[in-house]
Length: 342
Image 1: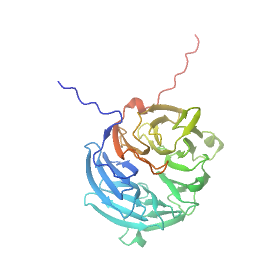
Image 2 (image 1 turned 30 degrees about the vertical axis):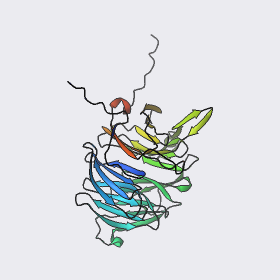
Image 3 (image 1 turned 180 degrees about the horizontal axis):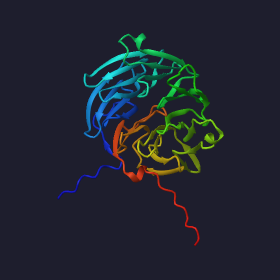
């Protein structure tokens, strides 16, 4: 009997990948569908288990982010300043609204039924996708930010907004009149990514300088005593420390551990509670631009896509790898206590 083909260490590569930089990818909450935005002005919908491209949606500019609404539709954020709704089964898209500059981030809130977009025009906007086709009726509110929006994350009714200038604003979606908390990143360098903990107690924030900060919403002394930061995605070469941006953070939906992806081409898995690295996957061809776990945590989608951190230079083609996740890679290891002397 012929031996079954062993998948490569990087995972299975999806066919028909984007032809320019991958800005984000996300698994659906309902299936193994994967939504991918890229600089080639397209959003692509894949069935990651079947390795099939299900649909493509063209925009007027680079697409900087995307998210699912349900399994049949999603939303996108584009450098043409538009926020769009994508209807997969009809291969149709319509414009939900506009910003005054490229739209960098987009999220759908299951708690409120609203779409939240963040832009380089220094605003956050909330949209009601159920509104009539008129954009005025779909816009719920516009909220000025201290700087350009770089990253957004939601958990429950909370939204965390990370901007240029290392600002972090935390809002309650039920009362957006002003931030619940105005913070500054505890990292010294530019923020790349913010991602809320699945349990709703705080967020992880990464910077361009090989570091991740673990933050907590609870402002009491006890709450703030839990916060810490750690170095990652760096290497020593000839006595020099080479430091890489940490582009992406993805939490495992079952265990609450998380993966980080950096411009060093590595994906690391961390146990934040026990302050330990659990796993490092084999190196990918180029920078890790985005990561996403499937709804059950069985699959990890990895965007291997040069992020131009070293300017325009020859680089490996953009690729999406889907790897099967083994429990040993993501499950926290219980602390081993020494046996007391008998």
